[in-house]
Amino acid sequence: MRNVLFVPYFLSLALMVGGCHNDETGLGKILITVDGGALYPGGWSDDGAFVFATLHRGDSWQIVQINSEDGQYAVVDVGLEGAGVGDAQGGRLLIESVEDGGSDIYVFSLETKTLEQATDTERYEWHPTFRPDGTAVAYDIQTKNGPDIYQQDLSDGTLSVITDNPASEQAAQFSPSGQLIAFHRRMGGEEGDNYDMIMHDIQSGTERAFANSGRDDSYPNWSPDGDHLVFSSNRNGEYDLFITCAEGNSVQQLTHDAGNEKYPKWSPDGQSILYQSDQDDKKALSLINVPRALTCD
Image (tube, rainbow, N blue to C red):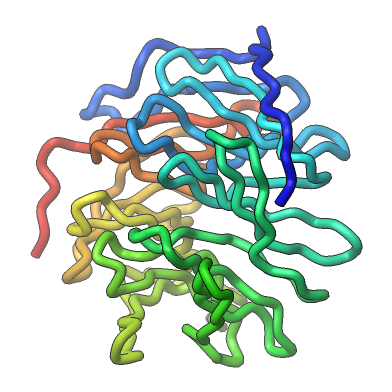
């Protein structure tokens, strides 16, 4: 365990553009953009007051904590080089760090400022996410066939296989009940490789594809009540965000911004979604309100 430092400096590069979108336009509002940098959503604090993201600028990778109201941010120094945040829960961050030619997963406590290493291999582990009860994590592990998804108990390190498939599978997200995992799988198609989204039952091992278009449908993320998922898709050209029902395949387009929108993260209160958006030559973080009436077939 390491003792590390939280650096509480707020930078003037943050830009907030007044609140979230008009529900009828499908246009999100920028939370923060950084000159010369790209931001990747990681997760929300439990109370929704802050979001956590990875800031990539030049050769630097940092974790930042951002006020979800005004866009002001502070760097969270976890004592690792090349650190990125994959998830947030219960005052803890799940971190992926590239050191010594590999990528390992760590758990960082925002309260105690301590860091615990969860994995220690020469392979790459990516896209970590907490199980809802906080006792285990899921992540991708690089295998000879490409990434597969594993689940690891945080108390004793017990590892269990979720997927073992010749196709690459990535970016798992637990349902709020912890019974299902949604992820994307690389597929072949008439226009080259694409990603399909898969729903996997942890107990039975059964799975089904959902809400796919034959293009790139990826990075599913659950609503807090477990009734819906938001995801990114280029089915209409550029990448937009779409919402689908956990049971069924009806799809509703959420964003209509110019450029690409990716990596959505649903807020704890279910009212808004954080995502990466294209802003000129920058990769910004934006927020969009969730429509009041979401229908399912």
